[in-house]
Length: 528
Image 1 (cartoon, rainbow, N blue to C red):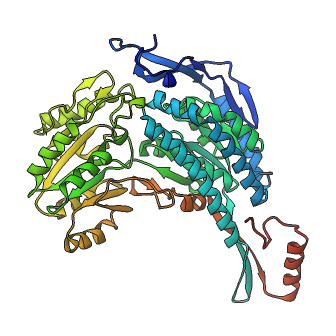
Image 2 (image 1 turned 60 degrees about the vertical axis):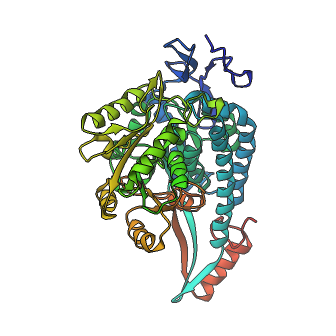
Image 3 (image 1 turned 90 degrees about the vertical axis):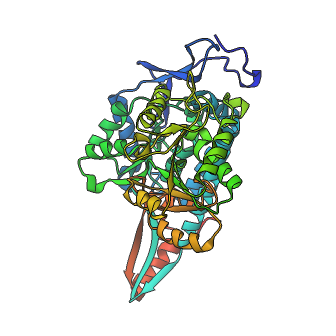
């Protein structure tokens, strides 16, 4: 039974039994087994029964192969309609898609809240940011096209250099940003002329359903193929064929490694990966305490810390650690647990086993000498877990090295700045760091070291992804390639060029190619 305390505007009045998939430009009905989609919310306050909000197809290897065949045929070794299409035509397809997508805003926002427990503001932000990302990608693609419209002449060789597609892309997105992060892979991949097989994440899957028609109506057959199911049954057999040119995945490095191993010619496989991170905050003794606490709360607990960009461990100077811990604990305990439409920072966790995992990290740390600093830390109500601040955290604790991806905040004090630096140097990850302080004599040398350990240094601000025009990547196990408007287009393409000796005969051929528009590649015009 539906909860009675849900505002009418956000009530989920009808179960979505999603039965369709998209392969080769055709939306077909699935007639096999289905997977239940449960909300993060319980039916009643005193109930242990989650609200079932829908079902999705549990597709099989046969249909995975059909999707691969369709994508492979659409690319057709670079001769297909999509990879050879004029730039402005691909852009028009993408513009058509985004115009259809915006009409589904309310539906998708509501599904983000119900499926993964993301609060209303963040759900709206994720949708709007995704639309902005697509539009910015179109603008950047036009810029790339303009830059490629000029001939170069060096050492008697004339060249026209452009970026060309790589082939067939397997796209696997994450549950924490099932729209934005997924489209940060899919959109640049296809606009560059690649074709794609896309399997939604296990959580945040229903929100893709409203967009199936938009994909079908906006792109030629086989360009985007959308299948539902388990990774082992869909992604694994596809990789084994060796026909995937690009693995585009945001998730865990173990998944990326497993899929790579299945490819028979790994040297041919391009990787575009957004993986895990253990981003530290380093709080120097002259840090603005109010600002630091505010940023550390947002950085570590936005969407319950379920972000690769979250602050996942805090190093604080020994000189101010008592003051920081006291004020930080008070501030964290003032936070409220609530439902997504209530716009609280803390909402239910979408993964069924996550509360037990979070509590196991807390218990491990406590058993090995850490204390829960805040009064409410670790208190659990069904799938709500109140954030726990742990201090002092030591090397032998699981939370020291593991990416907790949830509401646990490990804190370590340091006497020497080399301690957090060594932690980062020894870490398997290298995405971001936040520095809090005001003395340029301390900050300057620290920045110069940290930029060689991570890919983004945040000064007096929390770790984050945006704006999307800035690079988003990582060192070591945190990423392969760069995901941003500028870089993603380049990650999903390769520089290709036509060259000729600079003589009259070749110049005449090139002039005729341009004047008679006999080649979509050899041209000097561009789309404004």
